[in-house]
Image (cartoon, rainbow, N blue to C red):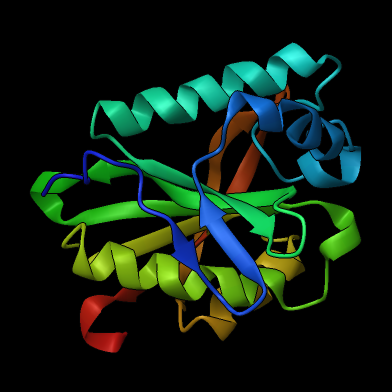
Length: 182
């Protein structure tokens, strides 16, 4: 269960799912600096472009160490980064990983994540040999809930005060998609 040596590029009708480069720092900063994007994210809103560069390096290191993979979602027309999606908390012994994603607000409610998540799920089940893909989200984050349901994820419950984020304990809804359901 190893990731490929070369970062895999995936494509959809409207988007290219590609490696996030340091040259994408400005675009990533533009959406991670918005409170509406980080509201349900375990990061504070960015105040400097260097924070985006640090996150990009973190994603690259995770890939290089065979610990996870995060694709940049780029608009096919201009290759501009509009969000990201990928796997972290990869537990190889248990054939499972957690999926996460975010998107710049200008692209919300346009079916972007529903389109982008499909080849990423396929990659997880076929290339990473996952049996379970799970997602944790704030129970108030209806948009993420709907995206995951649309992709076939099954709601499993709410973990009460399961995380400490931004100075407070918060609940985490959990859902999953099993290989046999995919």
